Length: 162
Image 1: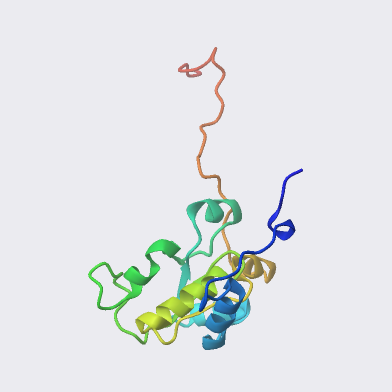
Image 2: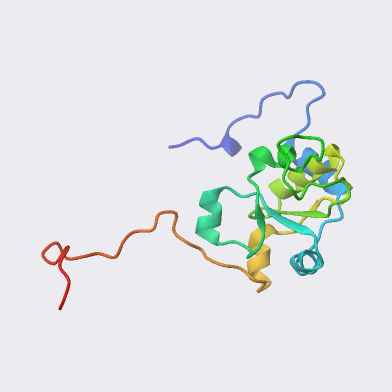
């Protein structure tokens, strides 16, 4: 029988540490989170819609056409206006940035991190891409990670019909 975390006693946390639920609640308290419809309106009005999901999630679930793909591990560097590795869109601290992840958890932490950098208008999408899809908003895909060539019969491979 495999042991799961719920069957194991939790270790005593070190003094001053916070659990992820508390960290998430504190991050969300700072944000003016947008439901998918409001996020779409913000995007159509000029906000940057930034998809931070890894390539495998985008391939498996789809993408929002025109969204800016910036994976989570480089987000702060790409949006800090004082960083040499910033994107051309990171022109100042007033840029409206709406972060999108798969279900709306990681995006809250990411938006709070951008606020820490100084982008005071950073926020995220409640429910993430999953909620965006359910709302029927524009999306493309899913698409396979690796495109395979159509199967050709080994007998006819390389031959053309005349």
